[in-house]
Length: 330
Ligand code: GLY
Image (cartoon, rainbow, N blue to C red; front, side, top):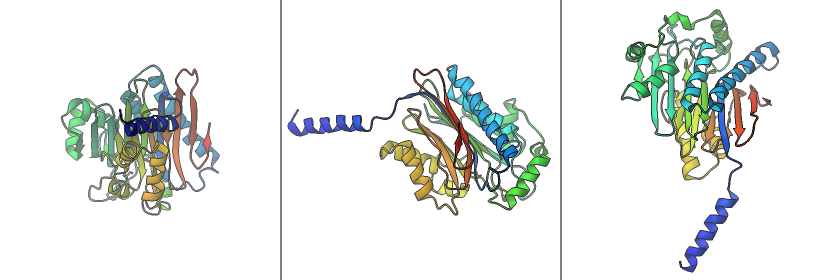
């Protein structure tokens, strides 16, 4: 080895030591319930407590699966199915309404170990769109199914089919009225995990934007925009004004920055949310976990419903917190 090669090798070793991340985590899970304007919510203690409780329950559903060595996809589907059943969020029951007064739902899931991905878009009768998205991976040769075809596929998979009005509740309609005065695009749900085998999985589910027209589809089911996972980098789930998240390919963009620019997951996430997106138009946030279990949860809006839970290798207890505004509550 000549002198230059030896110096280069020493520099590489020193670099690896200096940027060596904190201890690898056994497993980690991050959830979001949408980003946007949360004016008055933190002061409404009963309602804020309901959001914290829902996020905490979602984390514990994931924890039960991951701590037992379960696969990341099982945790993501279970967590998002729970959030789809909870009318607090703009996904499944509780989804926002399209301009025609219908409920049109999108969801996606991606597995980082082999880049397999499944998505459904614009479905009106599938009770748990995330389960249909996962079935696209396990039972079809495709990545994204839409509309009536996706509904026929879901029914053929034995998934629960409901009337479109199932998604409406008196509470949903009140919630929609409140958001009419606000940004009108809050409440998408998402979950990213790093399981004990080191596999990354990302999932996202939404009712989309209030009063959306013409079969509009947002970023959620677009692989690389609202949802992405790659075991070499990160798992990412986004929430916010979908058109901008599609234009900036936010979820893939984060993974590419992490992998090719060697930014940490926090650096990559912060750059995209705070510098690349225009906070006025591309309002929203994301959750991400990297291949070592480190997490990021930035948002450029007033708040983001979010929570994380992880366990360090060798530890007996988990670290857990949920947040609505800037603060996290352990
Ligand atoms: N981010 C969800 C949507 O724009 O539909």
